[in-house]
Image (cartoon, rainbow, N blue to C red; front, side, top):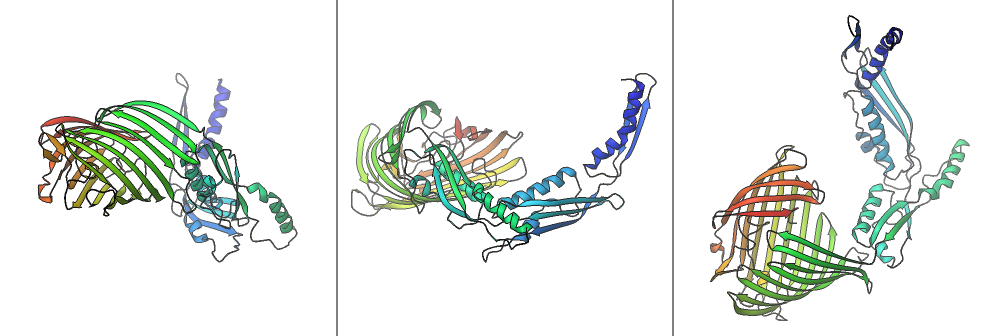
Length: 541
């Protein structure tokens, strides 16, 4: 560049600098530019931004908002959600974001055709105050109409209709559309789901309304209902997969799964699993969700386990009804179980049972995949109380809880506990599946899987009572990487007095993977004087 070009740039630079820093809230900067031509020409731009301009007054004018019902739109709440309040620094980016946010909050409700008809920011550099004014026009109030479904080929419409929480006449809500879409995606029937309201159906009415408004004629308070449109692409009906893996609880694993989404109108999921300590074959059948939100299923399983000198072989069939939301899940199940048990290589018992069990899970966490604050509680209660396909009547109850206590942005304390109790006249005749043992990745670390329980010769068997607890401190030195220290304790026994806790403690690494937190722990089992590696994904419930 020659000298004349440089001089032109120097003359225009102060105004460009003032325009630039004004977007950050500084409208009275001092700008000094110096050119040193002693050697290679050097330009120094010295900027003193001064005091920032603050928001002095915010005026939000709402037009329209006529309602066809007794439930008026909460205009005060809409204004309270304004994100650039009086006293904050007036930055251009914040001003644009605040306008976008308030309009978005409006169009996601019963007024999806809302518009911002005016916006103005008057800045007074002398008083360093910005006076803000926006005008929002709600447009017509809109409600949902009848459901339309496109894309179904193999499955009945009830698969889609029974999950619909939106009733004709409900106010338009983007959140309701997203919730419905999520439910359909979770069924597994569809590879793609799109849930929307057919806004195009009211375009003609809006044109007529605009013409009437221009002519000074009265305007209708609401348009015709918006058709609720669901477009789906069905998943392929059959799917098979093979997997290999390793668990620090049950050893090396090979698995084969086969799913069929339409077996006499039911969804079938089946699996063969071969692990070092456990082998199982299972098949489950799921009914479509009912209009009342119930999820019914039934299934059967064959299983063999070899844990700490006790070998069990079980055959079971079960029926289950589940309902609720991710925040509160409930279920009732009826299971028939037939079991044979070998302890210390001697066939010791054969038992059967038909228990009925109620279960519930409460979740109140900030994130269902990566929780850092809140709690999860699970409780079950049930038993086999009738002398029907039952060798020994019993009552059984369990409770588990985990709570997350954030100390700061990088540190969290996690507390976990589990309790269990079984009451029966005789323990003989109660299947081992319903007794309790402790130890392993998600129990007392530092011990092998279900290593803690009642000693019977060289074997460990289940007891009537269980109590475990854990305290863990996590520190995240990077967004995806963290470290932990922990202390676990617990045991299982046939009496409350026999619950002598066994402790384990150690350190671990944490990684936030796309499918949940990965935990790798090295723990020392104080009672057995051994170091053990533990690996787990996510949290237990």
